[in-house]
Structure formats: structure tokens, C-alpha cells
Image (cartoon, rainbow, N blue to C red; front, top):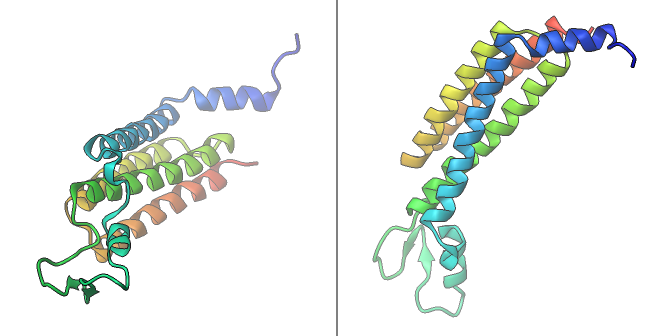
Length: 173
């Protein structure tokens, strides 16, 4: 049996580092939240209406209907129709946030791990990414506004760029 090469030994030592392990624990924690939101999204809304509210509105308001939607309000004026009016839509927004952030963190942590990059700084950034993802998912579940999404997405992109930059500056030689 051949002995492992120097690069394999270096990767094994890198992966055993406690900071690298903690970075992957942050990823796994985010993954668990995403899985929980995936479950809750389907538990709250059985298949009876599997479409978001705005798709249901488009299906219900055909040109031949007596009631049409004008400016977000139906002609009868019963209630304001909003895109995210139900608990199901709120859970979907939270699920989407967790899904996208899980994939983003996975990509930069993989880049850092395979590149034998930074350890402690990436661990700190991973937990910051996790904390902001949790806050953002809760915010989207309670109240969705485009400026809130913009602010959080700038934070996520900046932290992901920092992790990716550290992966290349400290590794990949």
C-alpha cells in the first residue's frame, strides 16, 4: 500500500483542524434549519392548494370572470390581495432564504476546504453567515420587504466573497 502524498497529508491535517470542523458545523446547522423549513412548509399547507397566492389569483380571475383584480384590489373591494398573505407563503419565503444561503455557504466552504485555505477567520465568518441567515429567515417569515432583502443579501454576498477570498489568499498553491 502506498503512503499518502504530501498534499493528501496536508489536506487531512487541514480537515482535522477544530476551526474547519466548526465552519462545517455552522453549515450543517444552516442545513438543518433549511430542512426544518422544508418540512414545516409542507406540514402547514397540505397539497390542497399547492400554489402561491398570486398564482391562484391569476387562475381565478380569467377575462370572463365577473370579478377582476384592479390595482391589487378586487372590483368588489372585499380585501387587498397581496403576494404573501398566508402563513404558507411566509414559510415559503423563509424556506427560500435558507435554501439559497445553504447553497452559498456550501460553495464557499467547499472552495476553502479543498483549497486548504484559512481556518479561524472562515470559522468566524461562517457563524456570522449562519446568524444573519437565521435572522433573515425569521424576518422574511414575519415581514417581507425588498429593502430588508437587499440589505441582508448584500451582507451574505460580502461574507461569501470574504470566505472565497480567504480561500484563495491562504490556500490553493
